[in-house]
Length: 180
Image (cartoon, rainbow, N blue to C red):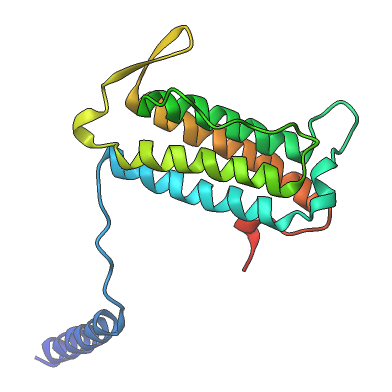
């Protein structure tokens, strides 16, 4: 009997503690599930990091390159813009794509082109649904599925963000994904 009372007391205390933890939690926001939502979420994250990186580097740092045989910071951003315009423009059926300035252009011109490429991608990612993932598009000489094109864009952007983050660190700046 004593053992049963002790067990009942332990379970009661555990129940009270668990309910206190549960009631103390903020409600969890509804998160969309499915392949389309997953790629859209990943795109939003890398977009934020790239745009913050573009803003964070001072204008005179856009010509920075760690060694003579690698791209400048501006060239990495222009490469993101070019790739996004090509991929997202294909998904959107856009014929007249925005132009990307020379890597020697000033920060404002490079950021303007980057914003234009993200605007093109915003439309492409917003149009992505679980129902249209397998639609195909011609990109250059190849056919690509919508999901392949969109995940490829996210993957490529993440690779380029890694380069931008490294350049920022080499200039003594903290990359956006490492900020507290």
